[in-house]
Length: 90
Image (cartoon, rainbow, N blue to C red):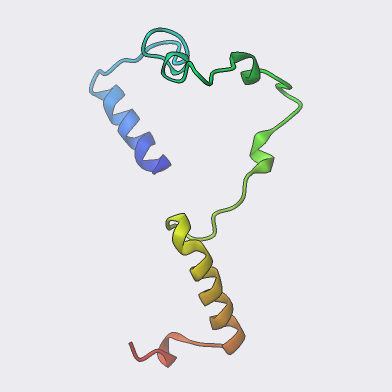
């Protein structure tokens, strides 16, 4: 989806679409949409010293979250039993 969104954004710009300069402010901005939860100071809290990207996980399979664990289990079974594509009838 990120790649698709990037292509969509580039296509829109090429077609002449414009956007606001500040996505956070204004009556259609992020802060307005989430005004019950917004804490603007957190956007710059520990800026340059704390990197949230380090708190993420790598998504091994390009699927939804509900199928991640079964795919891990299947992968482990395939490795443990040395199953090859030719071993699978259907």
